[in-house]
Image: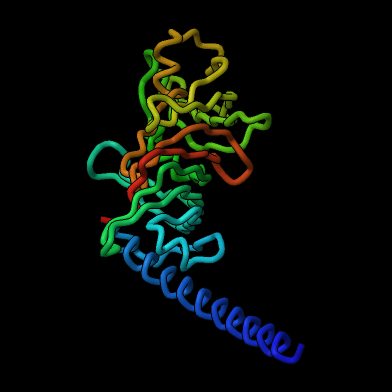
Length: 246
């Protein structure tokens, strides 16, 4: 009986030591992964990396991790024109089935899902913010984007008719969608009126409607869905065979 008690104590102690060793190892691995991801994606700050699942060490032996969560506060994505950048805020990605090479130089997730936000002032960079002629004697430009409720974007337009700026900007509710997995499209549900002047729909939409291409998200993930929200446009992202490193 005493021998059994001693054996149980030894098992508990060894189990505790294993848990400690496992947690030390996972904390070290999270730090290394964060540093490698920062370098791979050329990030200005170190991202948050959290390796889920227990025990970690047995996952390492198997060469695959069940679940890794990655958080990037500010990510500068290419805007599609090669020079301009667009800021993606609070990118949170959940990587599933992460397999890595024997020397840990590369890691690829079988699938990934996540969320992020594009602030309205960032999206406004793509809109026609400079006065543009839409009809003889009439110019217009977008001066603001905001939450229009029910998943719509409120596009505010300022217009000048025959040299006189209209006393109040006009606004229109617009739908926001994702096209081709890399582009946010804003399209007006209706058309605003500029001081009663009749203007061709195509000329009005040249002001109210616009697209923002977003290239080079981490690991090759793509845009999935998008919806207007109080602080900006909320997007969901997804991907397969997502490269984390290497």
